[in-house]
Image (cartoon, rainbow, N blue to C red; front, side):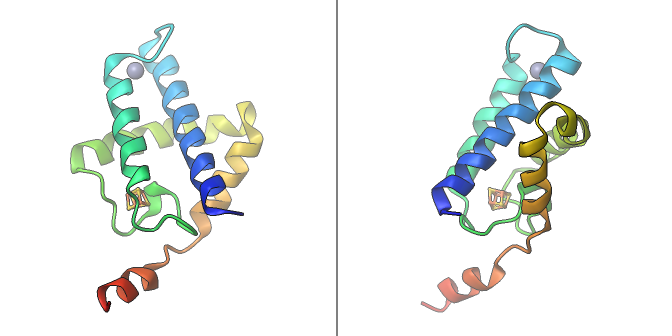
Length: 115
Ligand code: SF4
Ligand SMILES: [Zn+2]
């Protein structure tokens, strides 16, 4: 799986999960401002992710580049949307589970520190 596909998948999963959470909890036709803010933030983090290829999911990341308040919010979203996604988006859900099982490639971070 190429790097860009991996990130593309993660981007789509984030969008799916935040959308489900907002619909289920904030009941709007489209993303509410609060969830839109979270989505924008999460996608930006992903773009600048130091792990990129082979990364685990953000929820399991040992670094977690989110600021604490945003981290709490994305956790809530994942707790809500994770189990529900198995029914609505089974393929995405399976990838999400598999990606979450990977260990974050910390080695790469150490390598870059040495250069
Ligand atoms: S939380 Fe971890 S995996 Fe997610 S974007 Fe930040 S550094 Fe990358
Ligand atoms: Zn919302």
